[in-house]
Length: 308
Image (tube, rainbow, N blue to C red; front, side, top):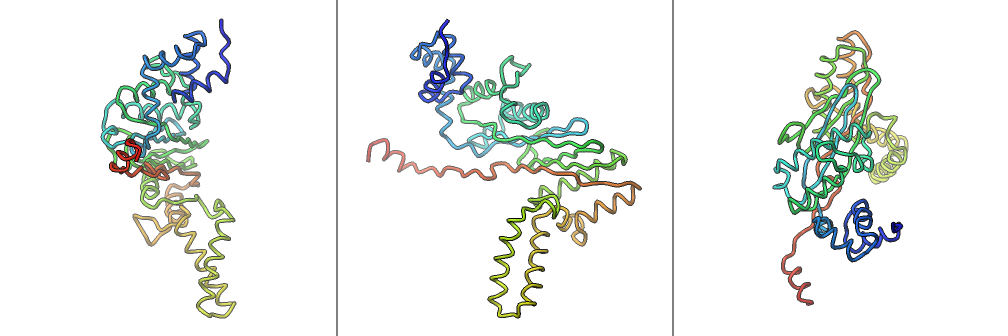
């Protein structure tokens, strides 16, 4: 039996663009013959699917899944919104959230998870879907949060199916309070997170470097006003508080009652239920955030093909 080396797998992957697991399998099936391995991948539709990987996938769906005291959220991208409406794609994304929960939100572990539906790894299932539908798709990211006691509340914004949409949020509440009442509170906080997009849970979680950066900007702005140094310090302190109110979940004005902060809503609920409630964490995935869609330039594409 021919030894399949990492260098061989790397070479095949670079020449075809297929996944590492698929390349290794192709080399095993062809006893290490590189040309036959390429043909093997092409016959399986894997090489042609991999060629689509150069296309930017910024559409797709986000999904959430909650079981017991933990929840997971995933984002799977496609090239077009049309594919996001495909039932096969939607089923994959919904399943991805379940798989994320089983694998603690680790994408690499998710890819090697053996899917009982088809007897293939989750990455192989994605590759098959790419070949069948004809668009590049990526299992971009996943996250999981849990609590020792309490609930994880899910929320999907712009829903297009069960547990599927454009924004997915999870909010973790630690408490021994009635779970139904906690779930109701958690849903409202999750809706707030979807709308307000906080960056940090509380003031203690804010990156000190980010605060110092903001302070330096505020100080320069205040100095330009020509105010005395002691007034400038107070102006900077006020701007920092404003910064916290913009980016910190607990400090944000609650969207359903802007006269109160989110932390006030939590405190009121704790008082009403007669027990402590801790806002333990949150996750917010917005479809395509951080991805730059490729601008199509048909004239430039034609010119490049003609060597102009």
